[in-house]
Length: 294
Image (cartoon, rainbow, N blue to C red; front, side, top):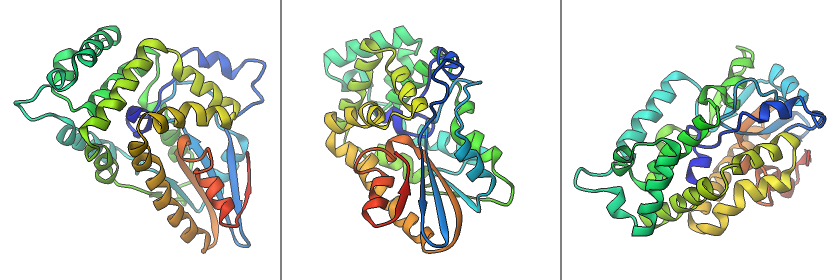
């Protein structure tokens, strides 16, 4: 849940997807939206932040847009300094006080499940015991991605930032402090609900992320909404509002300001921010912009 949606946390993929790229349905591709007015073009692409190395995913339309972009927007800056700052802040914000224990904080059934999941995915229970629920969720998700062969350095953002021309300005909607602050400020009961849902997925549906990636690579926006948004929307409406809706509110204002200028802009954010009636493309359509795409 939470772990699916942070830059260093959100997403992962299974090594079996490498075969998917060369299968018979290879013509399918992740969705791209193009927003136009008289002197601006805005290309929107939904990211999966962690992918297996070697997966071929980039749509030709996105590749062309990147090559001619005046600016490219990410959730966070894509550079080593930001990665280091994010890791440092996560350590500061995600660790429990010395006199507290995650296993004692959780209800007994959740504590027992946490121990089972930790053993299954090779995560130290001593480490987890020191973490707040949201940070423990990230640790478990990271272990699941590693077990699947995914690598954090193989994500969409790193590839596109490296591919973009030097003349394209790299911009970001948020800072590490702003992004991690959303999760650190989440009430503990909501953190526990999200951790519980993630543990259930890891135990009951170990191929759940495979399903999400299949939907992404095939451009199935209905399935993307079901896999990326519905679980969090149903389990914790308050957390969904803070993670998805309120961030979309802020980002849509930035995009409108950019469209009042001119030039070509590429926007790369988590795919969950682009699908469904509250997604950025649907909201731009509702504002009267011409939006091509699913």
